Length: 492
Image 1 (tube, one colour):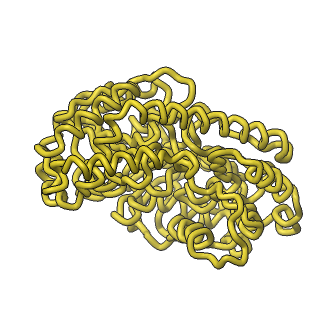
Image 2 (cartoon, rainbow, N blue to C red):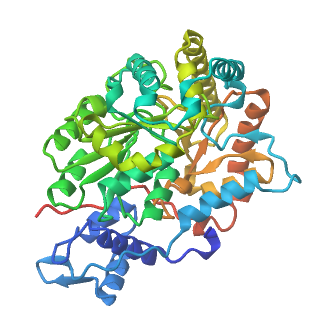
């Protein structure tokens, strides 16, 4: 993790970021880049800072300025994997709360945005395990092959239909976890390791997988209403910079927003051209609050252009990591290439999941879970608005388990994370969800779960921490405060 005190100069950080974008294919050699003023507006930086950044890139031989013509890319630099900032920060959070000593025990865990332990339907899971054992489920005597999982795939289709997703059992492919499914799909659909479009901020699991596979990231900054620039995505597709996107359309992690229907239709139109494939991440689709069930991108786009990935590990049964992919007309294509991994899918987990999904009680249980979580989220958001310093912004979540909070006055989320850690309060720093270390550092993610009296006190204590000299002290000027933005693209 990069300490604030050791940050490199702002102009150099922006030069590195622009160079990385060129390496990722945002601009091609010989192409005119956006102006200094456009970059300054995008990164919320001064004109002089961008002039210094451009000068540095010219010294490096990446850019050249032509009189009365503009600034052009000279060469595409090699994509660099020198900055492991995101991975380091994720590791730091895991170490702090999973491997730390008991000297400062976690009294208010609000860092992991998953089903709260208090709401896990343990009795129903135990009953499902007993039922499977007593009737000698066929899956227990062999591998989870396509033929053997017909009943489970039918149950998944029925469950998803309730939440607005129409998928045939024959279109489903099972995997041992959603992380493995995502990784396998990325390798299968992007063998050349070209840039992949993602929403920004980005779920850190996606960033880690893409970094591991050596696939550059093309950012689509998310607005307060969950929208992003489809025009920017379309431009990248038309310029053959992007052919694959990973989109979290139902409940975006970490902002909690949903992609508006009209944008889903526009993206579906892009896939219809045959030049864009989408991996749709649908983990929290059944954890949305107070909105009608609308069809996912998978049901709006041509069959085979969208791969919908999901699991019930975060919303229903954390102990069962098994996932599924709805692949439309390309289901057999995916199955054939994943045939060797079928033996890694736990037959016991699948048989228990099948038993759970067949229960009417579990549907009522999930409705209760959604109601409790929704109430906790609303109350936690109100508490943040009432107690945090003036200028704090809380994203109104459409579902999920977390609140995305923008801190006032350029306050560093990492400083708040460290100070809260020392008091036994677990939150996630916004920089965990950033491709670049300067983005979203003035954000934190709070996952209140079931809002107990202890967590209420912890949120109030967070408000005190944020307003204290501990995070707004004498070195405030060293904290970088950048408005998240996308790299501007010049229309040729």
